[in-house]
Amino acid sequence: MEQHVPDGILGMTEPELYGYLNDLLHEEAQEAADESGKTVEEELQTAGFAAAGAASTYAIKLIMANNAFLTRQLLDLGVLDAEDQDAG
Image 1 (cartoon, rainbow, N blue to C red):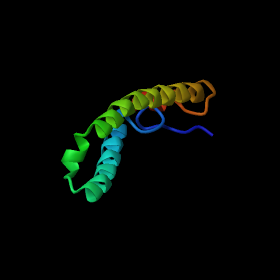
Image 2 (image 1 turned 90 degrees about the horizontal axis):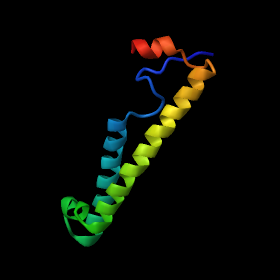
Image 3 (image 1 turned 30 degrees about the vertical axis):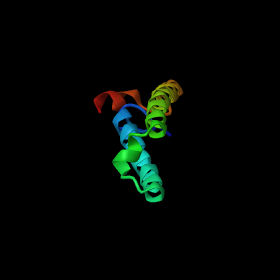
Image 4 (image 1 turned 60 degrees about the horizontal axis):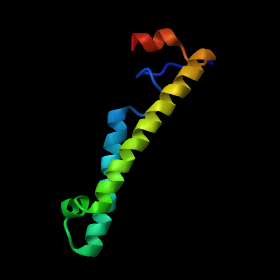
């Protein structure tokens, strides 16, 4: 069964992944702020959250590479329609 992938690649786009990461970091920072009495912004500026954000950028690059690899495999297998992807 052929399927069309609207953005030309499987999975979330890079901006969507970064947006989701931002949401996750803010949720965790809110929990930390509730416990510490600091603001969310103060928590986000701590070394721990800075490290988590920096490390996550590498993970996002890996996810994007994997999404492209999986998309290519599915195109090669004929599961996805390359013409539909180019038109999007």
